[in-house]
Length: 450
Ligand code: NDP
Image (cartoon, rainbow, N blue to C red):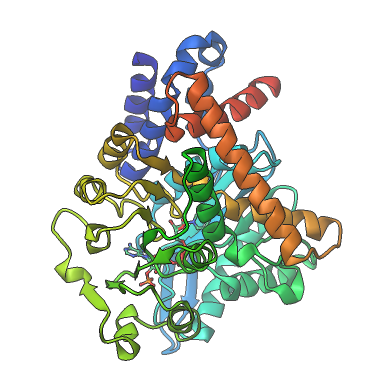
């Protein structure tokens, strides 16, 4: 469709060298074609052109001093993408790969994901190319304080509420919140993913991983199937992967793999969850150490991965849960999964599947939950944390988890019904993109040209 094609070409000129951002925009816009074609108002109001342009982009210097007394400098970002439905909401990522393209792709995806939850939150994302790995606690604290010295003036409980993402957990949120409080003198719900000691929500830590598994279960139930007894491949070994594995066990499934940036573990009898938590949440060490306890498990270092993909997706399994990072599942990986009998993919990570792989998966008609639907449990529970902070309440784990399940079910129904409405039943990429986009676009029209 020329309208969409023109928008992408014009983005490539106005925002050069942002390949992950173009990938996310192309994926969303392509699936919106049937809606845009049937609705002239979206074209007249230039909704597409407006929605691909962030409302505000903040980029800043983050200087800090390492333990050896050397001055270090990193880049900081906060992309306030769209506030049609509520305050900007989205995580902060600290990883050496972070750049404007990655933060913009994540912020763009966040708009539609947040809309899909049905909760009053807009979309944003931020982060830094700072690498927390191998840093001392003191270095992490000094970096977080410096990052907040600039960011504090742009965020607030009714304007922009960041959370965690890769490399940002409760420790980093704690240091950033401490500095925010010191700079502003205000104790308020400006972050989610906080410690339970000072305003965090039970079940927030578990929410993204649990949510991706709930979503998988709803997809299978719709096909008169369930996760019980299913052999599952999981990638990642961080917050999302660990709690996806935990919920898979609750559902009677057998998660047999996990991975980190250095390699993949495959353990036929099922991943030892407590050991995984010990290695990654407590010791923060490499997955290779899993072999000290289970020498019979298989460890494949990243240097031995196939040239066209990743070891984790080359095992036989019934279901796959990509929970590490973007573009970690290639076309060759998707073909291997499908030919090995995998009939469900539920994305815990953001955009883990390349565009060619997504097309092959949709064509195969296996159950496929795209990240913006399947991993929306994290941001949904963040909003529940905001609701608890605003009303000065602490809900029980069960209450938050019950809300989470209901939200994941609503997201599945909304994406599934929309896929039927547009003549492509079961295509949840199209369903989720259109369902999310419609809410944001209609709100933008009602709020005028702003
Ligand atoms: P964590 O930092 O807790 O864990 C990330 C995991 O992925 C780690 O095991 C890490 O390995 C691995 N990883 C990260 N980058 C790479 C890379 N370039 N190559 C290979 N492996 C890599 O992050 P989360 O679990 O929070 O996030 C995982 C994904 O889920 C991301 O895509 C994030 O955007 C998405 N997400 C997270 C939400 C949340 O609530 N946390 C909400 C919605 C989506 P290592 O241990 O070696 O660093």
